[in-house]
Image (cartoon, rainbow, N blue to C red; front, side, top):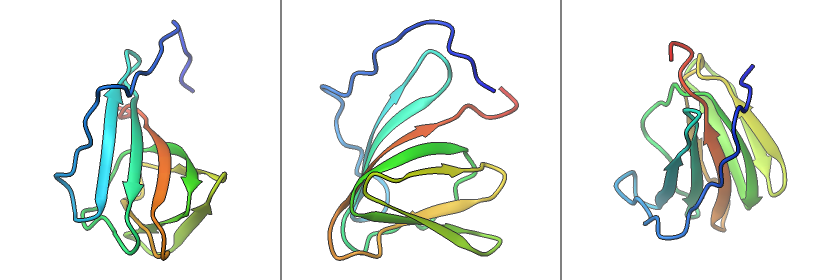
Length: 114
């Protein structure tokens, strides 16, 4: 279990949207001193990630609905004001199957080897 050892304010002000990923997906990423990365994430209607991710995430959907597909089969979905936990040992990718934009806050956890 991670233990917070010092306080820190996570500032998104002035952080530009990273739109280098798949069309309709963008994020603002802010690394924290504890090795986590805090992300403001947006998926346009119908947008999805194509690459599989192997990082662990905690998050909460603020608007819309996100579905996380697992490479080994299965998926979980979270709607507005629902949280999710995604294990890094199951490669996964996000998708917005809805007709409206989905927004979430996601915290990437440090790799277990770190």
